[in-house]
Amino acid sequence: MARTVATLPSGSRITDFLSFGILARAFPIAKVHEALAATGKASQRQRDLPAHVVVYYVLALSLYMQASSREVLRCLLEGLQWLRLGAPVSIAGKSGISQARTRLGSAVMQHLHDGLVGPIATVDSKGSWYRHWRLVSLDGSTLDVVDEPDNEAAFGRPGASQGEAAFPQIRFVSLVENGTHVLFGSQMADIATGEIALGKTVLPALKPGMLCLADRYFFGYEMWKMAMATGADLVWRVRRNAILKADEPCPDGSYISHIYLSAKDRRHKTRGIAVRVVDYNLDGIDGAEDIYRLVTTIMDPAAAPAEELAALYHERWEIESAFDELKTHLRGSRIVLRSRTPDLVRQEFYGLLMLHYAVRGVMHEAALKADIDPDRLSFLHAVRVIRRKFLAAGAISPSRQGRLA
Image (cartoon, rainbow, N blue to C red; front, side):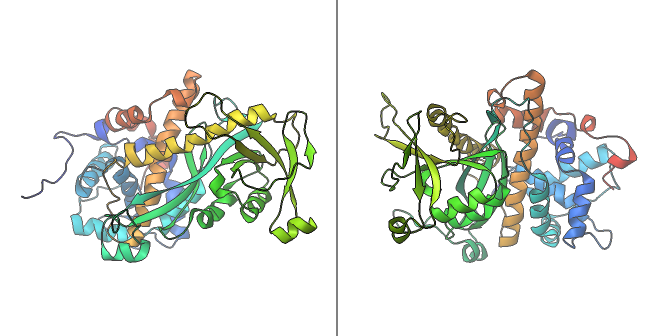
């Protein structure tokens, strides 16, 4: 049976469906041109689809994962013309769209992502801080990609209970700003690359003044040492069988211990790193483990009491909510990334993260104005409003500097 091409409802207008304003505000045209110049991707001649238009098109693809690529382009170009931003651009066919995306490549999107996507919480942002620390969490996830030979060769296919999974997959690791759900510092790789190896490439996004939460899977001597070197403070869970001798008790029930690179170092007490250990349990909760164990770089119990750290650790689950927003509410629970070549998969991946950042930025502004925690706002509702009602013209300056020329 012939497949019906997905389209947006007839009579669609930019004001109803494509919130171009949030894209231009989160990723200003001047920054787009800078990224194109830095990566050598600026258009050398006037094309049907200039490079800067393709950048915004890649972002728009993530806003409408269920619509055809040509239908998304139609709405984007109608928006540009309706807003009188830049010269009219013709609507390319499917082949022209693919060629334009291929010319752009993934480096531009990664450059923009790495340069502009980061924490956005202010001192007035609710739920973003523990005492004076900015709360962030570290974790990883996976995304399915189109089942093409090149994608499988580049990214691999995970195993399954019977045979192999239906689709090749990419693995990615991110930091999340807990209060705003902004994912930043993200890095992607093939499915065979472990989260620890990929996580090490994410750690440089940690900064002094941050307090990073992470699950026990990430804990290890080298990983801990690298994370400490960023200047951020850490509260990570460790396995119950980790050897952590109580060298010095603390008044709040925690204790000072040391971690070592090897058993030999432990015996000779060489290359030890001092940590503070918090052991606790969760009474009356079905399925809870007997003992949860945390280690932290915050050595002074008065600065971060053990009871507060135990309660704080469970904020780590905020990153799971952010991943759900990315994979379910933007992408769609049964939709794979649409790109058919490895470089375009990378391009689409960073476009998806950037679109999530733009949506979360709008939600953060709304939460600040209402003086509420962003957690009280629905991400899915925000996406629907942005698609349907957000006035694109009101979000872009009518001045010459605001033009997308």
